[in-house]
Length: 235
Image (spheres, rainbow, N blue to C red):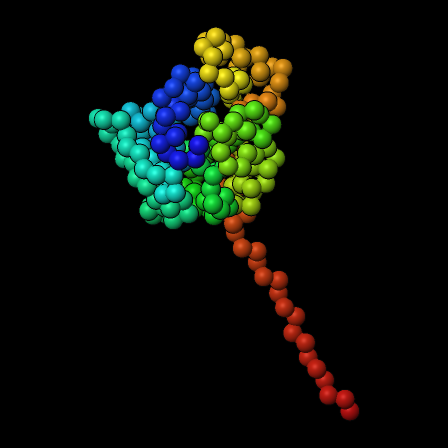
């Protein structure tokens, strides 16, 4: 379910609404207040940017061109657009915060996508990446957006970020709820989350990773001085 219409349909269901609520709780713990800041959401961020869109100075949602197009709910004073994931239509150093969800796992080139986020993120900005956990049943259920593309372990994601000149600051997990549509399961979502975090942390549906620019890793190394050789003619 990598296309935008399938993602929208998922979040319109009871299962999708519960999953969104659980994830918003974790994302809100990372960034509780983004008043006056410029926020970019990439992938399918519409169910999550609502956390900040009333207080942020600007909230922009970018849907990758290969997945389709979507619009904000009517009356929302924000922007949405479609763009190539590795050529975002923004100048350098544009955003204070970037949320990447339903984007990394389906990217045509994950490293190029992350380097593009590095470009448009301010030097003191932060990025939050939500990616399917490869150990979770959510990652293999194609009827949800979490079952599309390449799932990641925390270690894999950390190495990918380091290669794109990001440094991991914090990690968390979410979505311990079984990927079931049964209402009795959905009603117990808070209990599943609490129990899962205590007894089975490796089975979370998604990993959440906050990273910052690793500016020092991007600095070029100083060239080593060259020694000048003097050749003397033999007598």
